[in-house]
Length: 79
Image (cartoon, rainbow, N blue to C red; front, side):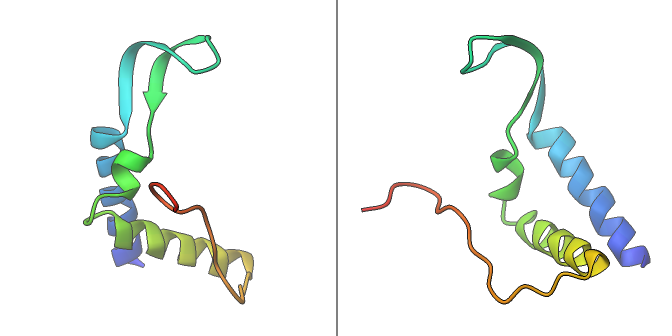
């Protein structure tokens, strides 16, 4: 349990350092925001990927989910 808490704290610190920016941002919708979050800057880091994966597994187990398969969007261009 301590390892899980430590990993989540480490993942949170990476998110705060890499993915969250404060300032004035114009979003794609044209609206303005003083906070911008780009999770890819964290989830695509080699040191964060296993932390994200384990966090997802822990959450799925806590919810009693037993997936038969996992899929998602690809990253980058598809031929």
